[in-house]
Length: 335
Image (cartoon, rainbow, N blue to C red; front, side, top):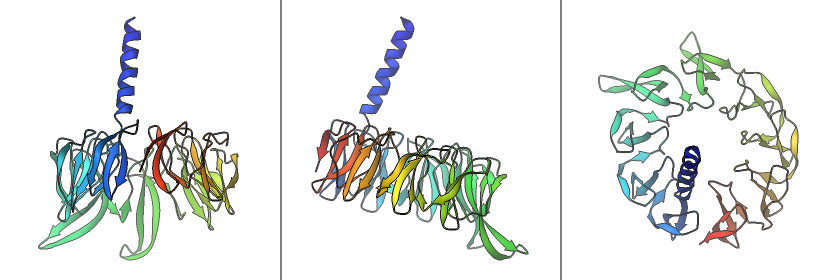
C-alpha cells in the first residue's frame, strides 16, 4: 500500500509538472503564454520571450532581459543586455561587454569576466577567456569552466560547443611553427580536455544519441563515439538522430534511417523534421502532416506549416493562422 501511495504521488507530481508547462504565443507583436488546455495564462505583453526551460523563461522589455515564472511573475527583473536560457541550474547573462552566470535567485554565482559564454551542459560551460594587459584585453580563446568558476579545460580553441553525450566539439587552429594559421581542425574532447576523436571532416556536428554527422565530398554520414564511421557519407542532407531515427535526404526526397543506416521510412517526402514524442512533421507538395515511426499519417488534418511536438502540443499554421494542436489533432489555441 505504501509503495502504491508513493507511486500515485509521483504520477500526480509529474502530471502537475506537465500541466504547468507554458507555450509561447505572439499576438499583436507581443509575446505571452498559454497552458496545455489552450488557456491564456500569461497575457501577451513582452517584446520578446524564450521558451520555458527549467521552470523559467527569458523575456525582453525594450533592450533589457529578465526571467518570468510560469505564472508570469518577473522573478528576475529585466536588467541584462543579453541572456541565455537556464541550463544545469544557471543562466549566462551579459552586462556591458562581459558575461557571467546567475542562479534562479538572481545571485551572480560567476562574475562578469568572459567575452562570450555558452550554456552549462553536463556540469561544464564553454567560455571565451581573455587577459588584461595594461589597457588591452588579449583573447586567449575558448576553454571550459565548472560551476565553481574553475578553468577545468584551458583556453586553446577558436570556438567550443557545449558538452553532449560526454564529449564536446571544439575548433582548433593548426599553425605553422606555432604562429602562422594553416587550417581549422575540429576535434572532440573529453571532460579533461583530452582529444579523444581527431577529425579531418567538414560539417561535423555535436553528438546526439551516440552519433555525430560528418561531411565528406559533399555528402553526409555519421560517426560513432569511437570516431569510426558508423554510416557512410551518402546523404545530400541529414539531421541529428532523435528518438533513434534521423531524417535524411537522397536527391530531392526525405526519409528516415535507423542507426544502422537502413531506411525505416522510405525517402518520399519533400521535407522532413526530426521525431519528437513519437511523431515527425513531413511535407508532401504544399501540405505538412505528422507521421508515426511506421510512416503512417496519424493526424488526418494537413497544415500549411508545422513544428515538432513539445510537451504534448505542436505549433502549426492552419488557414493562414498560427495555432497549437495536441497529438490527436485537436485545436487547442489559434490566433
